[in-house]
Amino acid sequence: MNWFHYRREQPDAVARLFCLPFAGGTALTYRHWVALAPAELEICPIQLPGRDNRLAEQPFLRMADLVEALADALTPYLDLPYGLFGHSMGARVAFELARALRAKGAPAPLHLFASGSRAPHIPSGRDDLHLMSDKALIEELRSMGGTPDDILDHAATMATLLPVVRADFEVLETYRFDGSDRIDCDITAFRGASDPCATREGTEAWASLTKGRFALKTFPGNHFFLMPHGRAILTETGTRLFRSLTVNA
Image 1 (cartoon, rainbow, N blue to C red):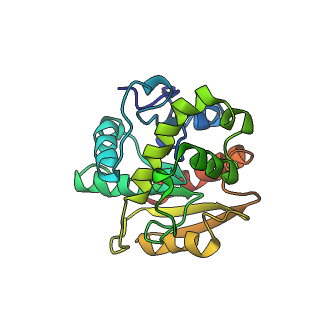
Image 2 (image 1 turned 90 degrees about the horizontal axis):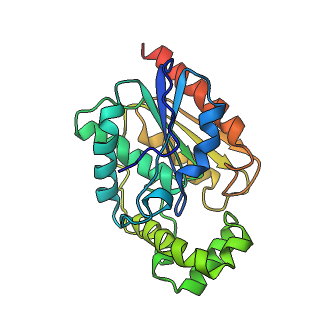
């Protein structure tokens, strides 16, 4: 199974960054980061089942099953220091992945980057998206602003996309975390200034989940601020990851 779509081996890399997509998203989100990153940083965009080159595979429906499979897939690639980056759903998957890797006795991440996500113990107030009709779900996606209208209005494309989106929302909406466990690595949270899904208060709550340092950086934009500010976010991520590498050397 090709978990690391668009990954390019970097012989001079001293660290890796595993990048997890938002609900319904693909590894394509981080494809341009592969070319933009310095030679010392190997970008590993993660492709989840059920999309693009893994279209024939069934998407996961439960967080525990997803992170168990991810932990097994990542373990052979933890020979270098590494960070975990996730946007929206990907941030919560990254957090649970860090916990799963710890449980396996694998090397811990240097840094967790939580983008566009409230902390996992902060409820969203919504748990019904995966149960909506196709029409209602499409309108919800339209209101979120991350999917172009020409895709949302294309019936054949949405027939392929909606089962993946629905599965990812089921992963999120059936997931529960009580906030009682902290991870050892530093956490940096990124949010869009006008993002209703990741308020400042909800994003700052990530600070309670680390035994290390916490930082919050806000960018202009809504929930999908990642798209226009990708280069700046990658630069900030690389700087903080290498700083963590130096501190832990």
